[in-house]
Image (cartoon, rainbow, N blue to C red; front, side):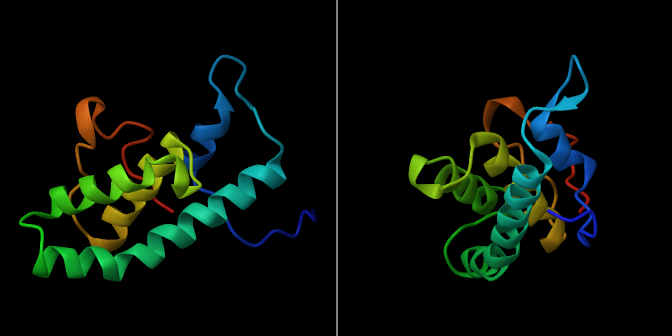
Length: 115
C-alpha cells in the first residue's frame, strides 16, 4: 500500500492494535487501515438505524447503543470485541449522544474515538 493514504486513523483506533508494552502495532499497517475503514463505515451506516430505534422502539439512547453493541459482539458481525466497542463509541460520537457504559467495563479505549 502506498504512503499516499488519505484517511487519518485516530489514535483511539490505533490503540486497538498496539502492543502497549512495546508501543508497536501487532498487525501490519495495511490491515489496521482496512479494519479502520470497516469500523468507520459501519458506524456511519448505523446512524439511521440508531435514530429509528431511539424514536420508535427503545426508551433511551444508552440502551440503543447497548443493543447495537450486543449485536456487534456476535461472531457473525465480522468485527472483534474491541472493534465493536470502538464502533459503538464512534456511533455515539457521530450522533452527538453521551458515551455509553457498554456493559461492566465502561467506555475505555481512549473513551471517545475522535475520528
